[in-house]
Length: 250
Image (cartoon, rainbow, N blue to C red; front, side):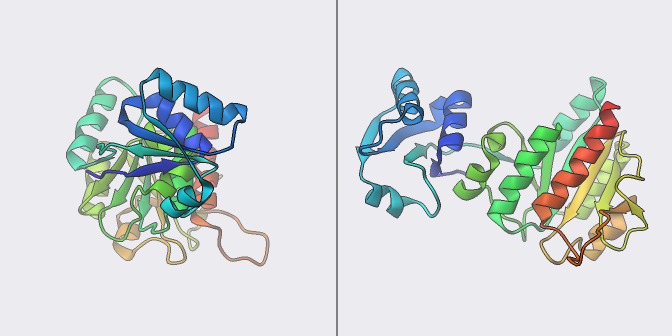
């Protein structure tokens, strides 16, 4: 389990206020800014009896690396990252209730901005769990939470010790594991992505690790028409997830 010290940015703090106001220990707002969005955040904070402090831009800038947009939330430790036992329990429950599993697996995504963007796309596409390895993976940092724009608060992120073993367990539960790789014969439009599914995306630049690739039931690629040989992992993730969503809704 992991704890976060700060959440910053209008969207991220608003999502935290809407979903988990009890997590917030203090709100820090920019002195001299009185627009409606910041005043709304202040009003909601005061409604929940959250201490509000008005401080200078210089002090806010010193607290975070990134665009805080005049608002920082100091948060209490919270269990936002889950383990394999949680995944197995929750997924088994979903299957018993007749729901179709739909997971995103990120194999070694180390950039927190890419992690946040992937979580945001995953939540929008209806993903139930995002699975990452404990090693060689970005943490759910304030930067990742900000980029996720509220999705990190509602979509479980699961860290597993052995990704290949977790994929094997998913297969034993009837989940089809599909990895994205440039050398794949089929593109993502040609693959049937409608059933119980885990889409596996590789690391920035390196792609899927060998063991992960070998564990996949099948591989897909995104057709490329230009000179660029690959896409940013968060962009590629969005493309694959929403093709799967299109198929699943048709």
